[in-house]
Length: 365
Image (cartoon, rainbow, N blue to C red; front, side, top):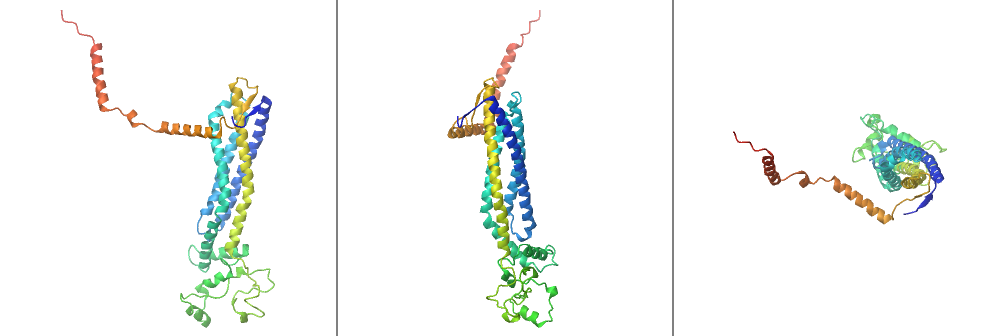
């Protein structure tokens, strides 16, 4: 037996009471994990317009699923702890506990995968934001197009909230026409020259939307002619620190989401430790109570353990049981269908038997 321990009646009672409290703590941790997943999911959905795919949503989805499963699983553990003190009620949990241990171990594995995915999906998150923000900047001017009416509002709120500008930096606005044609005066020489100078016929300018302006700057906001040193007094495009946000929104959002997911790491790891403690303690309680019941002395001393055999032997036994279940579930066609020859062979025998049993009629007198 692996990690065997002795348990008196008093120790079993204390173990059940302590495990009952720990199980309720695990229930609250499950609720915390679920709320954490809902919050992260909400934050991702808030800015779904600037994301190209939803692969990152797998992290909050797992958190919500594991949170709900953890609440139900650990609630069952509290009931088992209560019934462990009653020798007549505890045996009914014997089969269900095997399923409980499998589910609890699976939850721990899923929580570990959340921590790993939080770091592994950083590259996917950056690529998703890169494409989404590029499209958002491109459609900034389409306030009259169905489906894009709120794109300008979304980008402006995003740049002001995260104190950022553009995708990589403010120069991204130089490459797109972000002013709608309905607000351009096509009789103006400047507008005509800018449109003619562009191969695609777009109105490009070295300016940015108002939401890129940094309110902490002592200088009034400079939105237009940002690369022209002569357009502004006491201004040097190459050396002066502009009164715009210097950080791109992709980096700002990536840092925000990664900090949010990484901050969940310690909390998730703490939940894993609590869940593992509940799993190990319940295994000791189960084996100790079952051993006392087998000795027909519920108040006597018994042994509790984690595994009845070594790890290798236990794995082989579980593998053999699974294979037996699979073989039992398979249907053998030869066993369910009788061959026609066998059926014909049985019928003559039945007829012969019937003839032998039937009485011979007596001759007429």
